[in-house]
Image (cartoon, rainbow over all chains, first blue to last red):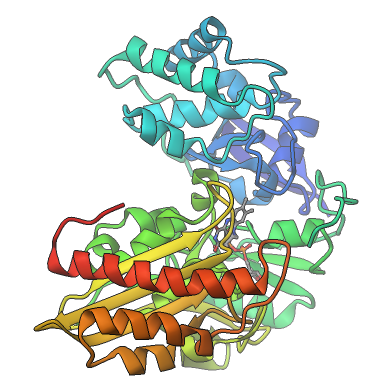
Length: 167
Length: 301
Ligand SMILES: Cc1cc2nc3c(=O)[nH]c(=O)nc-3n(C[C@H](O)[C@H](O)[C@H](O)COP(=O)(O)OP(=O)(O)OC[C@H]3O[C@@H](n4cnc5c(N)ncnc54)[C@H](O)[C@@H]3O)c2cc1C
């Protein structure tokens, strides 16, 4: 039983036919070919599949695709191209935050969301990131990249690329 | 459950129908008439269960966007929280932080940011895990649940809601509408402590305490624990013995007597022995911290 959903993906109104048992992760990767969203554990623990749903980070492996009808979704590839996203990516490159890289898109989304909400404290940033697991780096260089991003953006609040649901 | 993951968790291996009712009445009708229909809120428990085939369903009824269920309201003498309010909304709510700080403290510690943005209080209670983080605070606050079905409404005290691990009195075609918490006329000190392995693991042991002291004596204490019995529990006998004692004595007595109120088991997260020992210590710690907050003497964290 197929059903059609309509939502805004990275600013673009998108319609797609889905199966009701599909998750947002399934539809993003397989139907819409958004490969920046990664499948890690599939049970909400690793954070590799993190996307923004109506501006909030969520694990797309536990979100039913049918739920996002009428919502706003932003994925790592899009976020990486925003001003704030670029600042995060540049800092990650400079600080060697990336080893195997599989977890990085998810980290990017969470870090972006936390900064877009105005978090400027490193400990608060650490707390925001507990739902993203990295098995290579030991987090040290990722936290360094966060610190560097904080320095880069200073106290300015970059424009949040993710707008309200459009319904 | 220590087993090698033999499941592919990428997809839900079950065919489903999906309903997005426009209001609560419609949701109840679908639940009543569609065979194998299950309520889905945040999906953070249910989607995992569907992937592992621990739960079979034919259809999902999505209640997460129903405004009738997604509210936090301060009434006269009570706070009412809609079942679809997310854990993040609860943790950040001004009303909850001011009136129910014990619940706010527990909500903050539930899962990760990505989980709290999806997870709801209704889902947390209806899953009925012994480790459900919102349960001990809500037990301590004497919360009541409003259950609705197409046949009517019933009010169930949270203390009578859980009947065993993953079991509640809720019936198939019933929906938890809201959680109602009566406000106490006087202020209480509060503390929620959760012992866990990693930053967002579920609890090995959790303790929630509400405390009021008058002239050095315990006027009221409410102690609830998670992960140490088939359901989240109130430590009634420890409470009873502690009330009326000098605070320091009450702490000692409650910490000893809590053993009689719990029945921990061995599982993948901890042993029964460890849970018993740590329950005693956590009751002590939580009572002290609640006392310090009661006195307004600057909380230690
Ligand atoms: C990575 C991860 C970490 C987690 N960490 C914690 C933690 O630290 N502490 C903790 O307590 N939990 C934790 N959980 C479990 C889960 O997130 C919570 O129990 C959450 O509150 C469930 O809410 P939900 O809205 O997602 O429920 P759902 O999955 O939507 O539903 C759960 C169950 O409740 C039923 N249900 C939901 N709402 C209603 C309603 N209104 N009326 C009737 N039935 C209803 C559903 O049919 C289903 O059976 C974690 C889960 C994950 C995946």
